[in-house]
Image (cartoon, helix red, strand yellow):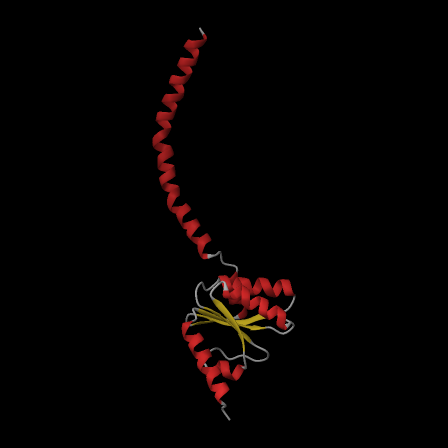
Amino acid sequence: MATQKKIDTVTQLSEKVSRAKSIVLADYRGLKHKQLEELRRGLKKLNAQFVVTKNTLLKRAGALQSEGATGALFSFGDEVAPLKELLKFFKSAGAGKTKGGLLGTQVLSDAEVTRLSSLPSHEQLLGQLVGQLNAPIQSLHYALSWNINRLAWALNAIKNKRGDN
């Protein structure tokens, strides 16, 4: 029998599922309530939420099917940063593991979620792109200035030679 509380929970979960850029399901067993609160505070800074709820309510809200104790990580901004924070927290706490996830409309296995977490951050990727775009310009600059530099060095050597006499 559906109670009003369950209906409200499914409505809230459905709204989160529709807004989320990525969803990761995790087994949170072994974490204490205080640790979960600490995790939630850390994820809130990254525009993400970790929600513990019943699997049947997650399924009705349109999330993935899961078994056992399940928490769902909803990432509303960056898709990868909250996942990295979650896995870092699980490692430091010595408990918890991912079960799978959803990136956009693509279903991810546990191995794919772990591989996704190993990607560099958005800022690092942008920095690498800028470096790659700047490299040809720097090479051209050095190639064009090489002859001028050689001339300057030769003139400087002649000046020093004449100054010594």
